[in-house]
Length: 236
Ligand code: IP8
Image (cartoon, rainbow, N blue to C red):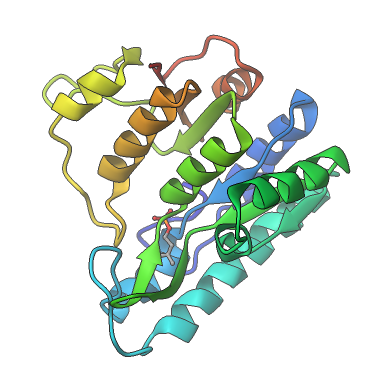
């Protein structure tokens, strides 16, 4: 949604600007996570890097990582235009901290200082080789470590809908999500399937997960502020 997936390396500054403006006026403590879009995913695809199995060779790893840093740089620049104070960090800065408590303290310190920690889906070395780590899984870790009240998934649909009717489902539970059959989609990291699994787990932690269109800034704003919005809410 923050990129045009049909064109490699096409950043949608207008979309990010609108969302940044809404975050700036929301007066909430926010940690932002963005995905790969037509930056990371197009490169990962080119080199057959995936989240489900490790690639023993590092071919395509620098290119994929560089694409993510490029996108992150653009996102942070846009945020700064709206007087937000982004603090970009690699997800591994947090995941590699020995104890979740230390990572949470570090993030809380950044938030207290008025910064918006911004991180992204990444590529890294796992026990079986190089894998893509989805931004959605990072959201889950962050929600757990910060005991987040809510996680807002801004996306290119109005919410979660039934494939047959295309009617938005206003509310879901972790149990309902477990019963749903969702295709993984085109992305290297499982697209909507991963998002829903993460939302179910987030809700089981006691937080609310919100699926809202990233193109509807007013609805996004309401979701960020914890108000009713047009989209899908997942509660435990
Ligand atoms: O779009 C993927 O993150 P996602 C990151 O959140 C890369 O799944 C490197 C493609």
